[in-house]
Image (cartoon, rainbow, N blue to C red; front, side, top):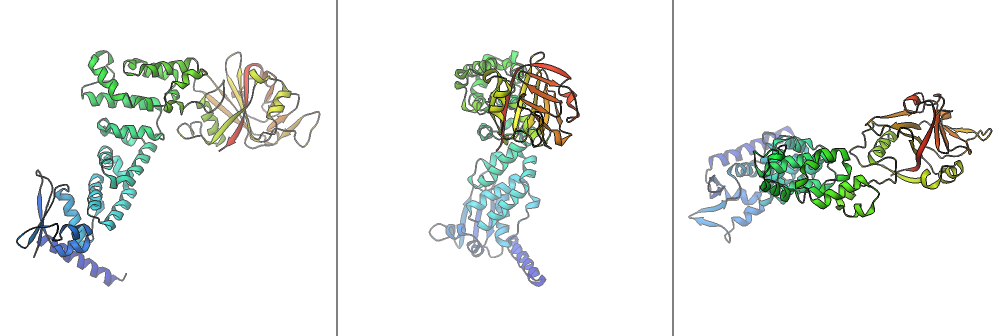
Length: 478
């Protein structure tokens, strides 16, 4: 568009804005707002019916009420401020979104939908999508209350929920959280992609619940609660509690953070969770858990490590920090190939079940101290090219060995440094990592050097260690 044309359009827009402001020769009066906040707008039917399908109908002879030559229309469900902005848009084609806050723009969206202002709807939609994160951070509570009340906000609603699930501090760290509508809280929990530890969800749930009962109700002072307070809180949280993935919470955290509030906890669920921690292999217990809890049951058939350990290992497979998959969906599955306690620990059995299976993961538990030692072989386990006295080595840049301390959160990984001698193959032993950096043979694991994995000493002390059990998993990238 040429500069002259652009200037002409700006001048035309300004002239129509002047017409709106002066109300010269008006033939319509629109009363916007409810009884506490009403304003009359003197406007022109020709402009309104030209710009809006809604007004073509509303100002027709069949619908309109007239007083003399002036048509009277009432819009009690649109505030004067919003209606003024819409009129200005109808007259000038201009609306300055940058000068408005998020809740106000949402009100414009709702009103524009009612008035069938399709071109404005698209502009508002685009702007809200562009600025949604900023609006959420400033007014999370108000934004959520509006978008859940009105259908025109559905697209923006989904985007806001996704953003909150990815960055929950936007809502949960806001003062608005305590006044959050329960319906919204339920929906957030049902989505299943809220990136927050489940014990944190529980703690926030308690604070939210206490705030619904009384501003002076302190969740920490449980000893001071009345029986009526406890009953009210129990009823309020009854349908929220089963939405937490309780099996993601450690027994220690459950004891410290949940048991003190057992009076508000569903009794059957409480005992099922306690039973799971005491005997995780009891199928009858898991059957009594809500479906939401079962989503967090380990996807891996291991008697040595749990889901959090597999998350750490998956993070290492991606060459990321150990907490990379802590709050992400795993992109690997682990299929059990061998368990020494049930399949035997002989080298023949090992190679029969684990050779030529692609990447494999070895998990072992030392009998003396309970330390968990493991290794990752990213290639087919099979004889190498240069076999001598049954011995051969396989090259790899991605193999590693690691340890977990079961009494702490400590873990350590040592990646291969000598790529050409990453994996040791010998049919008379199970599997080796490096020259003699770490060798699994029958029911023992030993380390005699650090030639291929330079930091092996942080994983496995020198010497031979008896194993309580070991498992081998096929690693499958999803």
